[in-house]
Length: 405
Image (cartoon, rainbow, N blue to C red):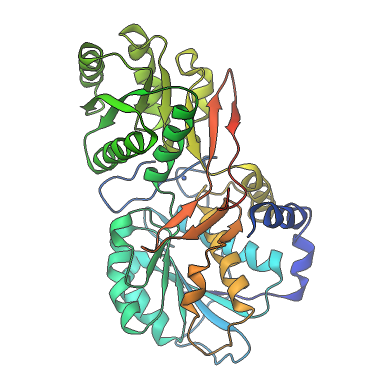
């Protein structure tokens, strides 16, 4: 367990980022696959795939119990600080520190608890220590374990998972939702005159959910799904699925609901088997794969995701302070702190967290742009549509500034 303080000297770390972030607040008014229900998506800007060197501490070690603090609100951060996901957890923890420094927050103290040692035990310890808000956990299975424990104490949980099945009953999700990405890119494509949609979806939970999301999005947009085929990511299975797609009906847009790496394998087969002129569509998973822009078969493809503009500035500051690249999910930790700090202006230390403030219809803004929680507790995000070009991505349709657009 580690604790993050907020020294006045933090101002030296603010630099140009706050200027950009203030502008973003005005403008907005306020990341791997989801496999089964326990993994989180890692969008744009790849970080290290394994922890790079020893973990960077986020504060001094704390002994049994926590000191009484009547001046600051206690907030628990539940992330894996050991084990196979330690790199992601450390990135999130470091980003929360940067957010406290950048905002010069003096009413929030964040204590980090290692979920790799047991999410339920971490939550129980956090509540015993007097924390009134939980940020995290990262994985959906951990959120399922933490939710009921926190609910009994009337402490809300803002998880970084993207599995909507764990939302509700005091659990809010900040993770990147593939359903929203699919809806956004389908709506954009329909607006460009495309009406006949095909789909290639991997077998498994992510593929099932993506397929359902496509059907709903196309129906709402007034288009038609002419064919949907499943595959298991082997070359033979991919080829067979594409040929079934070709034989069933013609399509002018094709969703490849898988990672960018898989899309690079699929695209040339599609181009040679009936989809030479089809517009390829992708999900938020594509934004981690810069190699997409090196594939001629991917030129002109569209996908929807959170914007990277402010994240690039955060990543630069992160590398300067910690000496390595962050995981893309680090922005979730940063934005969770921005949300907390904003609400903490009117949150008296020692009292219950004002959960009703999470329902602010105007939403919040941060590194990943504008977002708000819907009635189910899932973060609704303002997404941009990117186009794959020769060597780079470009913005085909900017993210809305807020939720009134």
